[in-house]
Length: 235
Image 1: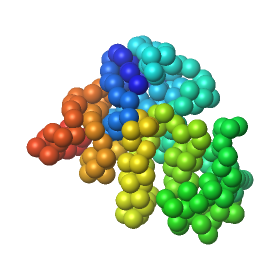
Image 2: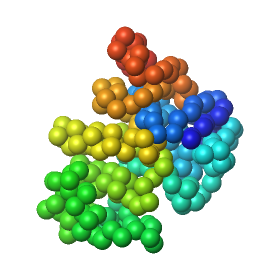
Image 3: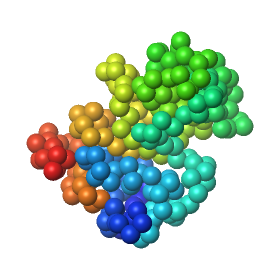
């Protein structure tokens, strides 16, 4: 599905990703752990063409997508959300949700899209006609996640950067259940700092420090390794 091979990423002349390799298998959920500044977000952004790659390559379904334009990567069936407040301030929430209908062959109408979103995040309902500029950080996070999750055609690969940020425990629980529903038909890579927020649904995980993977394993081993993983994350 997604294969990252000997990746090298730089900001100017400073290397921030060092000879990094990992593989996310089809239909699995892969968790990336690491403290702030470890390189998690940079790695994920390089996968979708938002940060240039200087060494190594990235393939998706055996197709080289290294440094491909983001819109082309998206058209291949890759969805992504990031920590930044990536919403259009002058569009309403409902208008944002309408943008998720990218297939000319889908029969969903806007009400069906909204119903699916409200089932996931009912708190959005009073804000459907509000401009995104008026939303709180948590509300904007819900809109971003909803747009990525309910888009059609469904993404083959979904990259989510710290999805629990700004969400209530109830919303985190519903989000976890929704991602679990997608598992099997969508490969998911979750970037998180908190181990327990991701291992409920992940199959495999890796720990990143200083732009390199220092530990990776199946989640089934994490109960005995959690203290070690936490030590890696905290440095």
